[in-house]
Image (cartoon, rainbow, N blue to C red; front, side, top):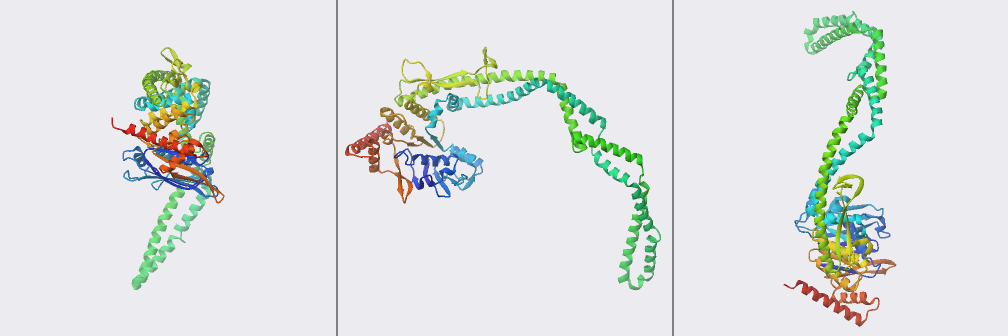
Length: 578
């Protein structure tokens, strides 16, 4: 559960530190006092997007920190481990979020920096915020299938995932099949082009690396005459009288006197002897190189022509001969595929038809699972609605199939296959006996929608493990007995998780285990919002204000006390042993 929440410089809140408890919490206060800002803070903790508009005017950044106490088996711990965040399940989980006045934010979990995606994944397992926009989502029929699948995850989930794997494989084959059919003219044009290119490259008989060694050969052939003169001259200088003979004479003279001063002259003599042998070896290499120099204008011509051909091919097919050969092999495969298009089409058609048959069977299985869960969900919602004083309401989760002239033939009808299957779902409702079932969006009032949503959330709360549920004015549009039933439903929800509700209704507020007053004041010409946990006396006064408005009278105070007393009695009956 959420243990503490600390807010700094968020909108009109300068500094708020508040502790929470187990059970049902109510946040009350005048309209515009800042109740929604507290919800915004928790939304940021859960991974909602930050904005510079949230930062208090004149401040550098807004800071929010929340501390949670979770069971050691809660899935958030394993998710953190996968993200590489060190967290001990025996300790508290602390999430910190900062948003600067440029709109950029940083997030930390137990001191470790995490990105927004990671924070959102953890936050979704900790906090679920239900606001007014969810009333609109409930009216959207395109969201109803998702709600059904969420409810029936244990049964529907594995079947749906298997179906979606088959759908992805089928879609890939179907796309290739359609592209082959639609690109017939283009195929023949490409085939002609590929055949021309293959012929042009094949005729050239290229060899890997040929362009490099041909350019080397061209350089040598182009300068063969100059190379012959220079190499021959160098050989003659080294091997002639001014070369090796001079060095040999110097060695002979030193040999005559080296014995008289071996310490100084012998090393010099050895250097000269080594130099003589090296010069002799270099001279022989120059002679051999000179003998191999080719002065061949005809060969130079051949090399130039070959390089011109390669240059032409490089402009078309690649920067090097190796790249040209790689391109040749790739279009060779493409040509083979195009030449065998009809065979490939037939092969794809057979495979596609087999996969379609398999996919239809999986879609039917998914649809049957949904039918089973739809009936169960409708029964569960009706049961919850009875607790919310809509006991005469009938509900049906109606499943239909996508009709499409281009769809697959399923049970004699043309049905469209999508990634979600072959079904559409819509909640059909009859609030009064004798009235036909009609779409929820056509007949539900604001109060009915509020209770419908609360009924759905009550059901889903039993299926997930989210410890904190937040309802932002879920009681909008209701009053009297309906408001009381909503309060009791929220109180019942709090048996298994921590529930927060922003409300203006005293019927809801009196049923809370803990009540917090959110007030806005002007201090030093700045707007300040504070959050205060109310004592018993404070609750009486706040309930009296909610009942009577600005002026609190003895009558409203007495009424408020009576409401709290009755609420305690209802809770006592609820918790009394059977």
